[in-house]
Length: 90
View 1 (spheres, rainbow, N blue to C red):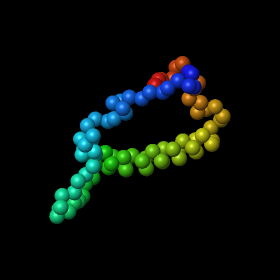
View 2 (tube, rainbow, N blue to C red; view 1 turned 45 degrees about the vertical axis):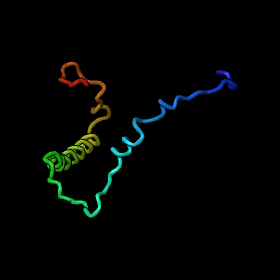
View 3 (cartoon, rainbow, N blue to C red; view 1 turned 120 degrees about the vertical axis):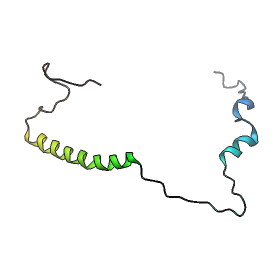
View 4 (spheres, rainbow, N blue to C red; view 1 turned 180 degrees about the vertical axis):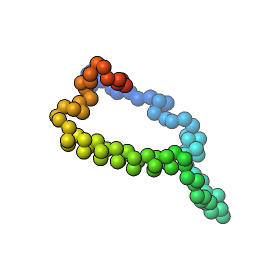
């Protein structure tokens, strides 16, 4: 590209929607005299399941690390599996 060529820009491409409408959507306007109300969010069932799962995962990782220390080298090679073994490909 020629360095002396005049670069042009399109202001319509640089603007984002109506001038005032976007800022009104993004900004929170507090109403005079009203305070914000906060509420406790109920515990999620997903969070409960995750909290129960993480200790089990940590325990399984510890057992795997112990097995890896005792097993011969290459025993846990996930790249090379026997043809007779069932595998899940991702």
